[in-house]
Length: 208
Image 1 (cartoon, rainbow, N blue to C red):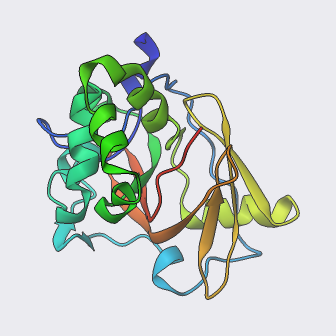
Image 2 (cartoon, rainbow, N blue to C red):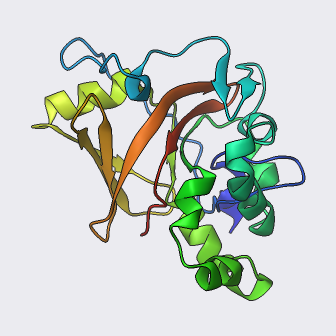
């Protein structure tokens, strides 16, 4: 998995959770966002210099890995990234757009399944899942909204895992991600700036 080196999301130098496996270094050029501007709610608010996640300030000068390790609500993700050996990948230059499931999102997965994915024998499966949460390039909420506006209401994003995610506007100023199996996840906090990309926190783990 050589291309895993420039991938996914939130993790700490010694902790991690989601797998970022086959990422390339192609940067997606942000689309201009004039129509379908992001909702004013928390999910699509503009990027700020010091966004708070899990009670901790996320510095735009730190990498995805460093920032993720500070957020109390991303500890499961951090552990998973470590189990998948993706810490170094997430410290790479990127840029990466990461849809980061919070702890509550992981708790929706049966405990036996969760624990099983963290075992060495399941590393490939964990990497596949984690990589599915990563898109090459830096896509802000405005970029995603512009793509959706230009494509009939749905933005289609190619993940580093190889399969696609679809993002569309939901109720109450939310944005909904639909995975390959038809499952949905809501962006609960968008545009968390990182030195090597951007993170959008989500409430459900996406499945390829």
